[in-house]
Image (cartoon, rainbow, N blue to C red):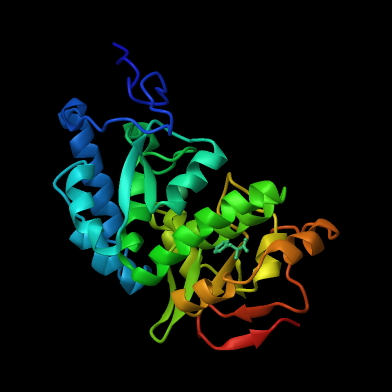
Length: 283
Ligand code: PHE
Ligand code: FE
């Protein structure tokens, strides 16, 4: 017998003006709690040596038995002045940016189906909560994300959202960080993926390029497979500082340039080796 579709998934019929909904924790089924538990356990077992320490320490603080309750998480998040708000799925750019600018992170309320255990095309509660929320407890990253939200509202006025979106993609979703212990990831798109978390650190295939603001904002990305290129920061402070500059003139320059293909390495790129974290200049 066919099971009815998840009534929460993409259900925008009860949204408030800011696209938020109530998280009704009672509506989750025992099967969903169990699926979340399995996703959490599978992914937690892969973090050591792959995820940034700042992520690992906070993912454990937010851990729950089964699906997370947003009110409980918000008690912990008060520490950095952030809170999460429940949403039915993707929301418009301006609404998303406004939430971030107010230190509110939108988290999808519904969970994927068992068939989507390894891969899902749209964000669900596991991606959003497990992948994004832990770093909201890191003060520097937390401030960066708020600045990003304000920058998003500004980018809308400057007709530059696609450039700014690349920064989010390559940093917040797919970022790598070079630590004294080696290369690690802090990107939510990677941290919630069973395969890419290993691939992004161990595989010889992808390019790993030192973070350069203009380079990132000029680079296209693909949403339907592992990334060809990852950009690598040295610290969250570097990310915060280098994005604190006025993007206005940079957007104007970028509008005159061709986008860079995701698989291309430029002579000006500084490559980071995945086996030995010593910098190499591209040939
Ligand atoms: N500095 C950016 C601007 O001038 C705003 C921003 C900050 C964007 C941090 C992204 C991240 O528009
Ligand atoms: Fe995400």
